[in-house]
Image (cartoon, rainbow, N blue to C red; front, side, top):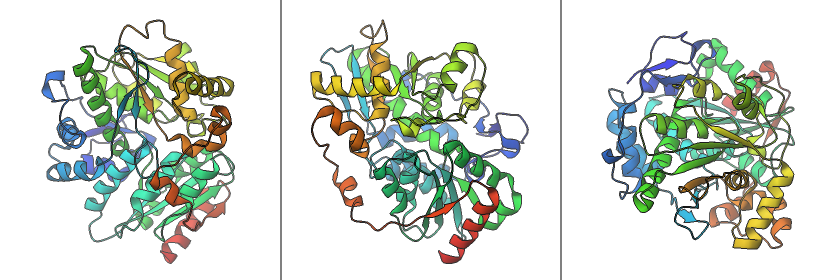
Length: 430
């Protein structure tokens, strides 16, 4: 399979080339040249996730240098439990796709681990520099997945004062080949710096830059795989094609679900849940994409005013990008966390709570099963969650272990010269 730019300004490339490039020349994002066609009967929902993922992703790897490595990559990346929990007793009701059982407690673990396994096989005799901007969870997952690897170093940009205390610890606690950079700005500044770095050919060549943000198609393929697996399982269990509700910031997760539906996999209606950053909501209401400055919210990993992957969503066929968008305020997030615990003893993180709030607004919520993407462990946001539920949130063993690790970071202003200097200093030290 070949991959093409959303802007039509670059020649088609192989999957490996798309993975290593991250973004396409000219600022576009890579998309499959043509969508694989699938039918629900093509895949057995009873098999483990790694095997299912290998089958679903096989067309994307066809003819690529990584084709014969796909099964091993899936075995290594998808060895994380993914429970599908019944939140309500009704069979046709809300289900929680628990994506937070990985080493950093967030759904980003799947994409980061998958991508790093690909990079380790593509690095050759040299070393790749993985550059990533994060609004909270991506950086921790990338740092963890890269930690200790000899063929990859990771440089992670995060916005000063815009991540939780625990998220910052996760960003800054890894080994010598992982550098955390605190940027004096917001997430959109961090994302702008990453894009500027990839537009600088000399910088790309000097450091063998590649990306672990969701501008990289390799971050989205594993999300497509587990979404399709969950949909197939729920369909087999209930006899109904489920709808999806996806907390959305930079829109990689939402795009992956829409891509699964466009391929013919058993995904029904799709609802994107956003916080007070309303760019996606306004696009859905008016048809116009108007980026705006991001605003801080309790669901900080979704604090994105210029979502990159909206470009990919708009490149899908018209019928495939049919979505509903629900905007959820901080007060509504707090109220939903408190009421869900009071009524059901279920604890949601602020991001996952936006999906639950969106589900409650659906008039047809009991006409089919709905899958809410539970994107992060609530312990990562204990300072928000614990006062609302009136008790401590217990960490997983992996999250508890973070507390004892030493941390390190550097600070820069949001300029390309400052980033270039930091890259060179870290390369010399690593």
